[in-house]
Image (cartoon, rainbow, N blue to C red; front, side):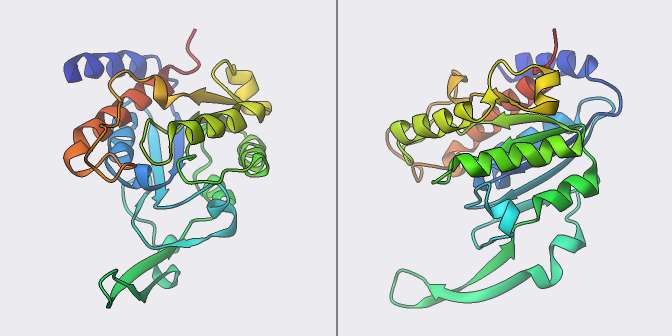
Amino acid sequence: MIRFLAVLLLACAATASAGETILIIGDSHTAGPFGGALDDALRAAPGTRVATYGVCSARPHSYFSETPHGCGRRFQDFDKQAPAKWLGSRVYRQQRPDGKGGTREVEFVKTPAFEQLLGDHSPTTTVVALGSNLPISAASVKKTLALIHESGAACVWVGPPNMRKPSQAQMDEVYATLEKNGVTTTATLEEARKNKCRLIDSRAFPALRYPESGGDGTHYQGALTPLGKQWGADAAAAVLAAFKP
């Protein structure tokens, strides 16, 4: 399966336009194995530059309000380095309850401002991998698309995967909100640059099924890391093929 995907990625990459620049924003999935595999696979496409920003617990609104979160991150610019402008004074530590009657030190980081990320990287395609953290509002989806379209980039939205938490019914509501606000599986390249966004429905990947027991119910990490990496590879192939005839 991995060998087949490698061949598929190379085939998709061969048809990618020269100079493609991809900006990815996401949540804890992007900060974890999924985001690492997605970033790596897209960087492997010839002539493609990739920058990835994933913040645990992030929702679309987090990228508008620079909301601080304290459970992990992935900041990778075109050189796969963490840009200093999003660290420094934006990172701080606080004592928080440890669940055992004591406290532990937690590192928080402010979510990068989406508008600045778009300005810094000038992407030709922006990939949004958000929706696992509830709620997700129609207004936040519309604002995300508006900022992408104003930047001139094409919009691709990788929807949340199959999980135990949130429930499948809750994920169905997220997908309904996306689709009602212009994020569709049929959006053309022209539409994705003007008023819509191409949806990649992660629930459709046949290998991506969260087990009935084990894990934390949400994340594809730990023993589920291979599934998370597979998801990232599948999503990368879908992104590269999104607007191909």
